[in-house]
Amino acid sequence: MKVIKSCLVLAGVVMISLARPATVGAAVATVSVFDDYFSPSTTSIHAGDTVIWTWGNDSDYHNVVSTTTPYAWLFPSPDGSPGTAADQNSANTRGSPFSFTNTFSSTGSFPYDCTLHVDEGMVGTVIVNPPPPPPIVDLTNPVAGQVFSAPANLTIQASAFDSGGDVTNVQFLIGATVLTNCATAPFFAVTNQLPAGAYKLSAIATDNNGLSATNSVSITVVVAAPVVVGTPLWVSPETFQFAYSTTIGLSYVVQVSTNLSAWTPLVTNAATVNPEVFTNKNAGGRAAFYRVELRPNP
Image: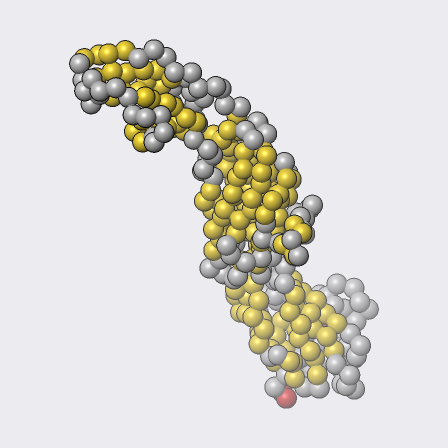
């Protein structure tokens, strides 16, 4: 199996990633703690994200104390140990350099202040929104359960959408083997010479929030049996039929000709039984030649 085309091509050389993209963690927002103000004073994040308050280079001492009841977090004790309710006051402050970190697991609005400088308006708010939805990805080609004849040339296509952000990558895999990564639409990968076997094709869409979604289909590649046409049988003066051998799931076309040069297709079908039976109800006793061909893979 080899890739003959992908979304990542440079100077005619196909670039193939050999690993899944690394998992992207939750976002981190930063707030600067300056002399008598927080910057920004309002921080908007998603549940699961982290805020880091970092003290600036000034001479004042500050703290970051939750003003909700109960406390949304506890500023650490003066000795650096985990904070207690008794520590959340203007006697417990820090000078630069210092930083304080809190991860928000629930949604809501979380006001806070520096208890030493609240009268100077040193207040802030963290607004925690619900987590953004993951992207939606759909494998549009091939369809689940489709059968191909070996060796198979396949174009794997996907559509991806993200209501909470932007799709930044769609990765295509056959089993655990990565074919390629597509950063922009159209999202597709092409393989050739796929041998007989059962395969799971997957598309993994990742967005700018680090969220991902996967869609997979299973297909089968088979070695097509030779087409053998049985003896024609006249059912009536206008109708005759014949059987022909098939490989179930593959497509066949029955053609007619009067000169063995120009062939006209009569019927095309995906075989559901073996053998299939072709019936011509308008033969009319006219001499003609018939043939059955295995159609190429779609």
